[in-house]
Length: 345
Ligand SMILES: [Cu+2]
Image (cartoon, rainbow, N blue to C red; front, side):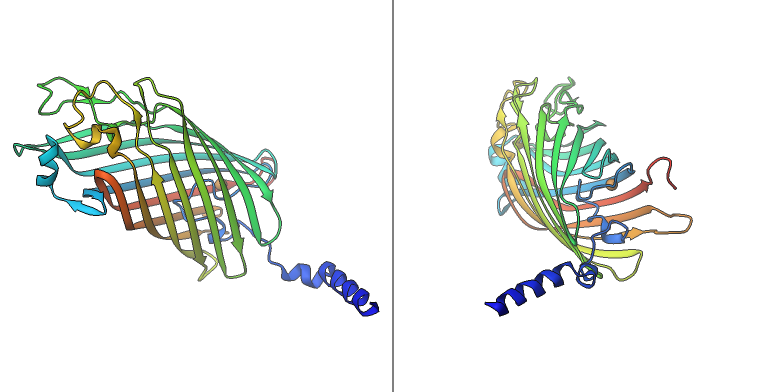
């Protein structure tokens, strides 16, 4: 009994001794891997009064069609549909602002500009391109710290997406006889609905490596003005980063994304067998990517506080409710700059 009391006292003493507290690494954003790989949003919080500007350039290339895991060639699609999508290029310019009104809460706003084009082949053999560009949806978010000390941190992500992106994008195609008609679902620039996006992020770090995980989902609220609702989306990602120097980290990540079919129907699409991209039941899918990236961080010098990062997605697995275009690759390049609280240095 006496020994047990001694043991408890020893453990209590050890747990509060400065030596042990020092041995526990404190997570910090002042490292190249203090931010997640650039493709992850809402990964880090800021300290009271700090704000941050960011810009991301993203390009995604989709090529060839899948139904489930099976590749479909164009002639197979033409057995059921008048028109087959061949490939699609999507470019996104995304600007972001973060601000921390307290140590516990970081607010963020992100908006983007989209530029997208899709090539098609008709059953008789003609080729045509559909293209749209403009403002996408705007998201507002709050990151709420749950665990804000120690080597492992956790925060909750709460986001709302405002439907600033157009769902009225029209274009001329070989069947429209010179008239500009509503373009297929994936050519639209926004969801048309207010979307709610809850999530959770966990970050861990020691002297030389770091890791993180994030799970997020997008819930669409109601039906948009054209009478349909885009499918929801759930992302789960895990990453690991090593730090070969004070300015550079290298990361590997796993991303699983699942997105749903649409519900409702845009009355502009008279014939669901015209092209798979106007068919609400051929929109959903699951993808697993291996994104590889680096973060560059400048702790001092002329570029002090600036970050430059890039990430390249290699799709490992895709299962699509097709025919649907498969993702070939995706690239994200980003710049970030944090600013100290106003009135401080
Ligand atoms: Cu930030």
